[in-house]
Length: 143
Image 1 (tube, rainbow, N blue to C red):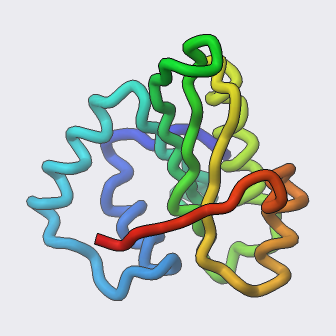
Image 2: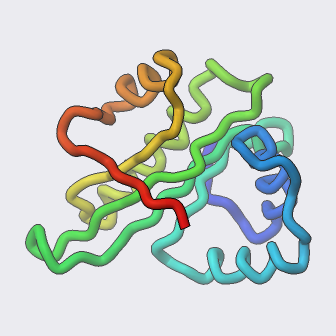
Image 3: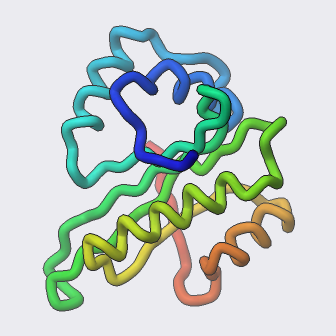
């Protein structure tokens, strides 16, 4: 089942993020403060795939107000992850499709996604999901 995260999903999501790039989960009280802010933000969507009561895949979709493009917002995708034992089953694709539907409902004119992955299989996954790396050049400044 693919859905938006609920308030009760915090622990499961933090556990899933260990499959992303995290080495440990944050202190729960600090995480709960951030989680409360995320849950209250109507433009911040955490999409999850759940199997057997366990969160096994997820992505974040944030929509951003905009003064260009006829005032249409844009969307950002971040933290795309699937637990290793659930990969290659279409779960992350389903999460990305859900995010695309959200962006379309909010009249976004584009969705942007950055990946640090260099493996061709992962890049191919994003291309199959209709993202391209030809139209723009991405730059990042780590803080």
